[in-house]
Every structure is written in structure tokens, then in C-alpha cells.
Length: 270
Ligand code: ATP
Image (tube, rainbow, N blue to C red; front, side):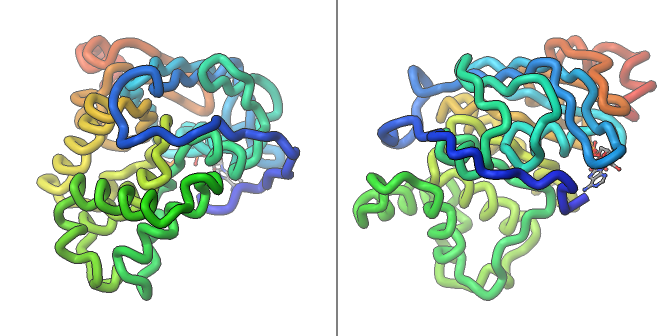
């Protein structure tokens, strides 16, 4: 699903969270995220029905469930792409419900939608520079931009090697790395990742998920990870949430969900 039926209206909220940090480290900058009793949908479709989740700072929360369970809608409702009908979205305890995508980006919530393409006609570096457009004015200085690019290339060596290549020439795994790197140059505190391993070879998928672990453990980013591959997602997540037809049917430590044979068979397909 690509076009939310309930587009967001700007509400003039401030959204900015003050100065940007230096290269991410775990600590005071890490943010908690909570969704309380969230209801959202499209026209007649109620895609989320009273969904509650909590993600502690610098944790990975896997959001799992079959096609149509509401996983993508949950990320959209958090990032402001779908306006919730009721319920709340809390960032570090502050109510951000119904904010626009721009406000959420300024609050340093980054959303990488499923299959979100790179721009093939631009170089890798030009694609990365696009990720800086949501930054508050203070970090638009050349030195800040250079530092952010250097950080991206340090984290994603494969992109450094290809910085002047057109993004259209990258492999699937490299493109996925590029869209994640593009989200990271805005130094998010919360990263919403929709099916980052989709269509990738198993070895590349492992690399992407290893990167997600580093983002939480080393950079202190709070990650909400939507994945069809429940086994792989639970292996790296701290918490797991299982959705079915828009409702939460299980929410627990990832290792407990992975050990629940009945739940796995019923909802997770492994
Ligand atoms: P998938 O893994 O297939 O992407 P999902 O768990 O992410 O599934 P959603 O995409 O959030 O589920 O869809 C939840 C429900 O909302 C489904 O019934 C879906 O058909 C419906 N839906 C999603 N996007 C739209 C849209 N733009 N317009 C109308 N209905 C939609």
C-alpha cells in the first residue's frame, strides 16, 4: 500500500527538539516512544484498533504479523503520514499525536517506508544530501553536512566506495543501505524501518539487520522494525509486538515470543 487515504493536514506544531547532537552515542539523547490506544485507518477500513506499544530508549521493537495486519499503518501513524482517529503518540512522554510528517522529522523521528527507492539518476552522495533537507537551519552549515557525510561513509563503507556512482547502479542491498544511511544523516532518535530486508539475499539481509543492532546499541537509536521475516527480526529485537487484523495479539520480550510455539505457528509462520 503506497498512498495513505487519509493524508495529513499541517497543524502548525513546532516539533523541533533543539540543537542537534554530535555523532550518536547511547545516552541522554536516546528517546522513548509509546503508542496508546491508537485507532487509524483509511475510509471504511479500520487498520489499527486500539493499538498500544512502548519502546524504551535505544531498544529494537519488532512489529510482526501477516499481510494486512496493520504494521505499515502503525509506522505511518507514528511518523504523521496517517492521522490517528484516536489514541496518542508519545515521544519521550510528550504528546505528538497528529503532528505532520515534517514536524515528526524535526522531532527526529525518521521513517524509511517499504521499498522506498533511492533516486536512481542521482549519485550516492546526492541521495545522502537529500536526507539533510529535514534538518533545522542550524545544521545546514557546510561543516555539519561534511561531518554527517563522513559519518555515513564510515558506517557504510560500501557507500563510500560508490559515492560518485549513480544510485541506479547499486545492488538491492546497497540501495537498502543507502536509504537507511539517508535517514540517518538527519540524526534521528527514533528510526521506523518498514521491511528493510524485503527482497534481499539472506547474506545481505543479515548485514542489514546487523546494522540495525549497531544503530540501537552504539548510536542509541530507538528502532521500530516491521518485518515479514519474524524469526530474523525476533533474533535481533529486544521486544516484539504481533498484530492481527489491526489488534495487538501479543507483546513481550522478543525471546519469549520466539519461544512461544503456538504463537509462532498461528501468527508468525515459523
Ligand atoms: P503488508 O505486510 O501487506 O504491508 P501490513 O501489516 O503492513 O501489511 P497495512 O499495509 O498497514 O498492513 O494494512 C492494514 C489494512 O489497511 C489492510 O486491510 C489494508 O488493505 C488497508 N490499507 C492499507 N493502506 C491502505 C490505503 N492506502 N487505502 C485503503 N486501505 C489501505
